Image (cartoon, rainbow, N blue to C red; front, side, top):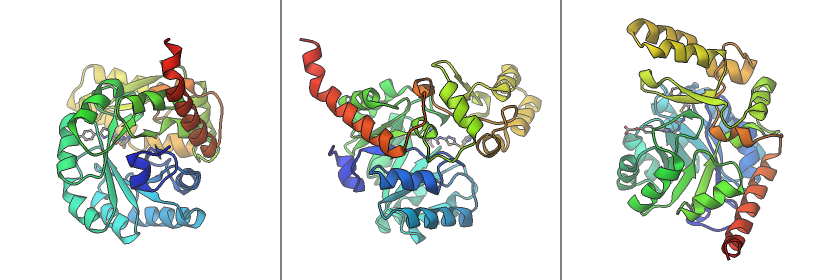
Amino acid sequence: MKTRITELLGIEYPIIQGAMAWIAEHHLAAAVSQAGGLGIIAGGAAPVEVIREEIHKARALTDKPLGLNIMLLSPNADDLAQLAIDEHIEVVTTGAGNPGKYMAAWKQAGIKVLPVVASVALAKRMERAGADAVIAEGMEGGGHIGESTTMALLPQVVDAVSVPVVAAGGIADGRGMAAALLMGAEGVQCGTVFLATNECQISDKYKELVLKASDISTVVTGRPSGHPVRALKTPLTRKCLELERVPSDQTLEELEAATAGSLRKAVQDGNYEEGTFMSGQIAGMLTELRSCEDVLHTMTESAETLLKTAFDRFR
Ligand code: TUI
């Protein structure tokens, strides 16, 4: 399947693996890139040397293009932004903010830049700043989210910019991909679907919770802090929602203490009581572990079939 995104990124399938802090490391990113999508290493809040090592390990597994995500709330964002240049990363994606101040340096280095946006306003600003494409992420997705759904945000972003648009949030199969392409997207970014892959290195507990999830298994916490996060319902999200009901300086402090380091506890320790198991709403659709290659191939083939046969279904 050829789109401006496959051409821009030099990939076979118009599918980007979403960056997920602590999760999107070299095994996962290399597997996705090697299979013909774009694998992304998540910088998260990790030290630069840890991420440099992840990039080197991914490069040893694949010679296909590789992405690095800069999470803009990270205290290490400046250093990770420079790391992308030093390590000759082909593609940078950003999340949770406005990457305007890094844009000129990345473009100068020949890096393709795809900021994640959650609004039309930021999409337009990013296009003016030189973004090669934008990733429009709806609030169906996991982790830190905006206010709009993919269904509402995507066509509005498509109308607002001329650069290619990648759809994200709530897409995990060929139906979602076909719908996004019909709405004008030229690629999709998926995170949750890659949690349920053999190559993903998260704890067995995390995978089990994703596979067991239903359509209503996720919840959004953190709204009072200004950084809403979607995750699977667990004892910790229940505690967060209780504390958030009457926000005060004290409850916000308690929330900060309860959630600090909680994603790592989910990813590495499978700590059900204290972990934050970030996931999108589409987790309810995932029932078995697959290979990254199977995810990319099946999603694209199914989207192609649906797009080719759609008209006949309504005759
Ligand atoms: O960034 C994500 N997803 C994430 S980041 C993350 S780590 C984290 N953990 C707890 C709290 C906060 C972060 C986990 N998941 N997705 C991309 C994304 N970007 N979603 C929403 C946004 C966004 C929101 C507001 C981007 C820009 C923005 O406004 C920027 C501006 O200045 O206008």
